[in-house]
Image (cartoon, rainbow, N blue to C red; front, side, top):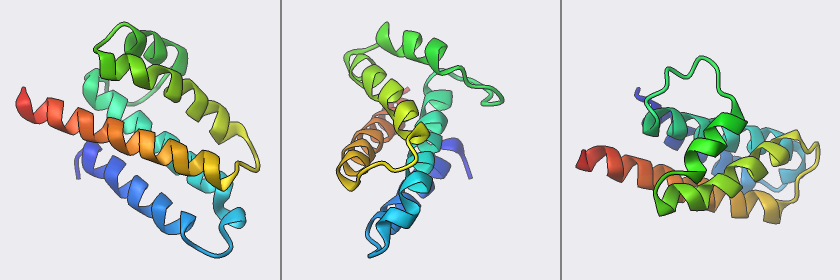
Length: 114
């Protein structure tokens, strides 16, 4: 399984947990799955080995990239904060999931066109 497939798998599992009645029990874990999916996408777009990810350096690279990457740079930092939040809200997670999914699709399309 390649990194983008792993990212998509993380997003699917996060979505599954988000739909459960007892969402609040999984909220923190869902945020971590979203962060892992985003990390996998950025390792692909920047050709990183994925062994260590410094979110500040990645954010700097995102903010100097294409418009899509610039747009995601703020989301990426917010995602790290969300993952550190012990009780994120369903709305926060839903919003972040959409942004990570969009960015992952962008990375996939960019990789396929290269």
